Length: 127
View 1 (cartoon, helix red, strand yellow):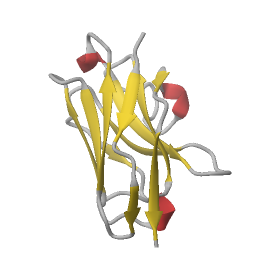
View 2: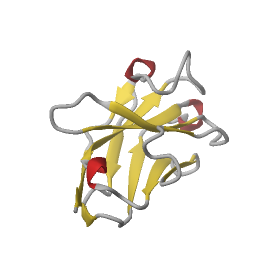
View 3: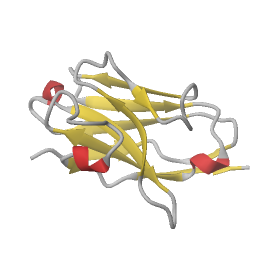
View 4: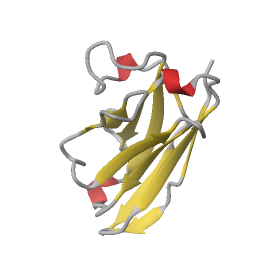
């Protein structure tokens, strides 16, 4: 069983930056592929970014590519999401997710690929 706890969500002005962090309880954190998703009110949960066990192959949604950076520290059991040039449309609850495998079966963009989810952290970007 893996517990994921997100932190770092806040209210920020458009153009600003935030850094989200996800702390994982897994004893073998390096065995897990990790992802970030987000969900705005009335919308489905959508993929934001993902990273394999080694951190060598990050994936990004087109909507955040060039603005967001995912990274992980296997020694600290954390995965971070650096968000720059934030836009009002980035407002959502951001969720950390873990897959009990070093990579994905088909695609990192599907929620079905992930076994564990955090409770989420709210990000609000004002215009």
